[in-house]
Each structure stands twice: as structure tokens, then as C-alpha cells.
Length: 177
Image 1 (cartoon, helix red, strand yellow):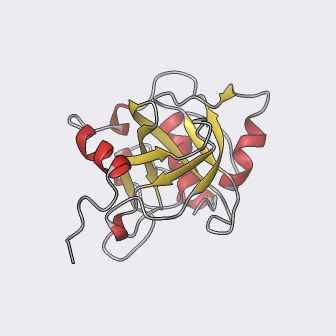
Image 2 (cartoon, rainbow, N blue to C red):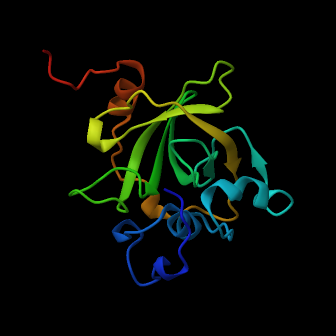
Image 3 (cartoon, rainbow, N blue to C red):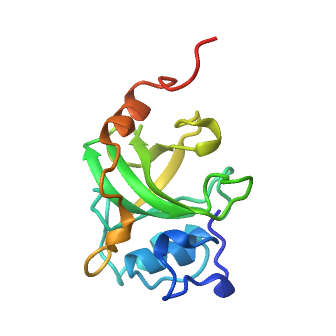
């Protein structure tokens, strides 16, 4: 999901949320963090160049580790902090939209499921399953962006209640069988 392709740069004239492509060019354009290469390399590349840590901040890039389900890693940008274990992120190339990957999704629920509440393991809302799903993803941490985040990272009226339900009431939106 994090393949860096130079040809798929986010055009300056296009709206950020209209971008279709890989997660890396999107995260770079949305955050201002000038790191290149596969998403799994961002954490190490940021050392000494950008502040890093394990607390979410709006505009920070969350760097997912390389793992079986994410062989190229993944990067996304924090758009809202809902509460201490739930936040929203905006990213590209995660869910299928109209049958295709690459589209941008705004204010997607991210839930910290790590035993120490340190954001090292998370679940991510996935459109295809209409919920968080069962996969737990390893996270290296947050890379803190310089300057102000893009105003397009979050909607005017994000669904805080929906994000909390997604995190704390699994299957709440699914039909009963």
C-alpha cells in the first residue's frame, strides 16, 4: 500500500482529497514531510530530520511498520484526535472505492489496541468490511510535520460518535443475522 511512485505525485492544482494513487505521495503533500521511498522506510529516514514520537498530533504522519499484510508499509496523516485511544486519519490507497484502490479517504477511524496504550498496534477502519476488521497493524510511531496541516485533512463535521462506536462497539453497524 505504500509504494512510492514518482509519477504519481499529488498535483499542486488538484484538491488534496481528489488525489488517486499511492499513500507516500499523498502523505508527503498533506503533511509537508519531505521523505521519499517506500512507506516502511519513513520512520528510519525521519530520524535526525523530523521529530518523532509515540503521541498522535494533528498533521503528524503515522508510520506503519513493514509486515505480512503491509509489505511496503503504509503512511497516513492524523486528521483529528477523538480521545486517548481513538483518532481519525486521512490517507490514500487503503480501501477499495468503486472497486479500485488508490483513492483518498478522509477522517478514517484508527483505534489504538496496544497493551500499553502507546499506539504501537492499531486497527484501521476499512470500507470493504464497513468496520475496523480483525487485523492488528504494527506502527513505528508518529513523524511530526513542520508547519500547519492542510485544512483539507478533516471535514467540517467529522463523525466523532461514529469513530467511537467503530472503536468500542465492534459490529454495531452490521446487520444482525
